[in-house]
Image 1 (cartoon, each protein chain N blue to C red):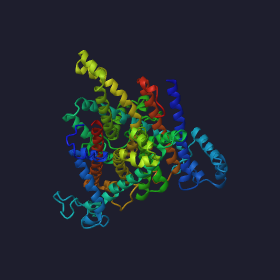
Image 2 (tube, each protein chain N blue to C red; image 1 turned 180 degrees about the horizontal axis):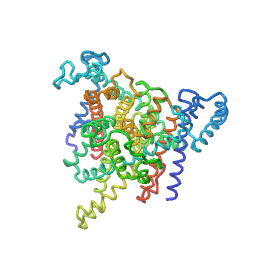
Image 3 (tube, chains in turn yellow, red; image 1 turned 30 degrees about the vertical axis):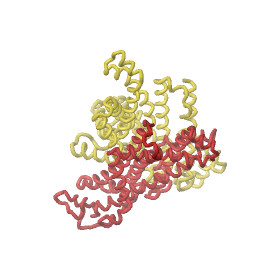
Image 4 (cartoon, chains in turn green, cyan; image 1 turned 120 degrees about the vertical axis):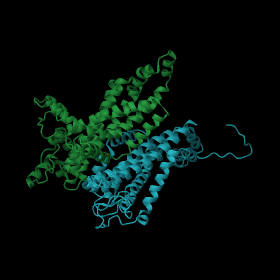
Length: 342
Length: 297
C-alpha cells in the first residue's frame, strides 16, 4: 500500500505541475498584458503595474516567472476578478461548495439508478428487459443536457408545478455561510425553520441533480452490466452453483460484491464527464456554482477568473479521481501491485 | 477449416470486409448507418434542397406552428420562429453546421492523432513515459471545459469552436492509436514482416494500419457524438455559432425566449441533435458489436 500511495502522490504532483503550467501559459495566450492576466488588476496605475511586475518577476526568465506564479497559487492568491474586482480565492470558496454538493448528489443518484439497472440487464442477458435497458441507456447518453434541463423545467416546474426551477434555496430562508454546502449549513444553523429550509433545499436540488445524473447513470448501466456479465461467467460462480446455493444467494453474496469493485474503478473517470454536465446545468438552473461563474466570465472577458476556474475545477476532478483509486485499491488487493502509471 | 471446394481458390475477405459482413447483418446498426448517410447527404445538399433561406425572415408569418397544428401552414412544414424564419430550412442548414462540422472536426483530429500516436508508439523510454502521463492529465480534464478555455483564448465564433474541439479531441486519438499500434507490434505477423526486412514505416503502413482501422473508427464515432454535443452546447451557451447562423444549439438558445408560447422552436432543434447523436452512436455500437463477434469467431 505504501508504494501505491507514493506512486499516486508522485502522479498527483506531476499533474498539478502540468495543470499550473497550463494555467500559467494561459496568461500569455489570452489577449492583453500577461501580468494583468496573472493578477486581474485591470485598472492598475503605472506604479502598481511596476509593483506587480516585480512581484511576478516579469523581468526575469520564464522559469523564475513560473516560480513566482506558483508561489502565488500556493499561497492561495489567484489574483482579482477583472469583472467584480474582488479576490478570486474568496469567490471560489463561496462558489465551489455549491458545485461539489450538486455534482456529488448527482453522482449518488446516477449510481443509485444506474448500477441496479445494469445488474438487472446482466442477469437477464439477451432478453427483452436487457434490450429495453440498453436502448434506454443509448437514448440517455445521446440527449443534450441543456435540452433535457429545459424539458425538465417545462414539465416539472411550469407544467406540473412540483419543483422549483432555479436557484439553490428559496430566498425567504436566511442561512449563514459556514461551509458553503447548503445542507450542512442548514443543519448547523439554529434557525427555527431549519426543517422547512432543509426540505426546500432538497426540492431545489432534485431537478438539476437528476438532469445531470441521467447521462452518467446510463454509463453506469453499461459498466455494471459488463462487470456483472464477466463475474457471472467466472468459475467461482459455477462453484457456488455446484455447492447448491440458490440464484439469489449467488447474486447477493458473491456476484454483486465482485462486480461493484470493477465499477468503483470507473467512478473517477466518469466524474470529469459529470462536472462538465454540471457546468451547463448550473447555467440553466441558475445554480450559484463555479460552472456558471466560469461561463459568465467568458462573456465578461474575465481572463483571471477563467484561468483560476480551470485550475480549481480540474484539481477537484483529479482529487476525486485519486480518491476513487484509493478506495478501489483498499477494496481490491489485486490492484495494489502492478499498476504502472496507468 | 474444412476445404470442400478443393480446386477453387479460397478468398479470405480482408478484416475490414469481414467486419462489414457482420455489421450488415445487424438491423439496428444498419438503421443507424442509413440515418448517418442521410445526415451526411443532407449536410452536403442542404443549400440546394432547403425551401427557404435560413436567415431571411417572413414578417407576415411570425411564430407559425408546425403544419400538423390547426394554425399551421403547409408551406412552412415545421413552423417559423420569432422572425418568421422557416424552421425546416434552418434545421437543414444546421445539419451542415452541427453535424457536418463535427464530422470534419473528427476526421481532422483523427488524422493528426493517428500520425502523432503512431510516431510515439515507436519511441521508448522517458520520452514515451512523459507523453503518456501528459496525455493522462489532458484526458482527465473534461473536453467541454478545455474547449471553453480555447474559445476564451480565440474568442467566440463557429470557426474558433471548430478549432477548439479539434484540438481537444486530438489527445484521445493519440492515446488509442499509440495503444493499438504497440499491441499490434508485439504480434507475430509484424515480426514476420520485420524478418523480411521491412522498415518500421512499411510495417506501420502495410501491416498495422489495416488491422487497427476499425478500432479507430469506433473511437471516431464516440468522438463524433461528443463533438456534436459539444458544438451544440457551445452554441447554446453563446460561445459557438453567433446569432444569425442556424446551428442547432444556437437555434435552441434563440427559441428560449418564446419557449412557452412557441415550444417547437425548442423541441425541434433538440430532437435534431438527439437524432444525429443516436444515429452516430448506433453506428458506433454496430462497429463494436461486429468487432466483438469477429474476435469470437
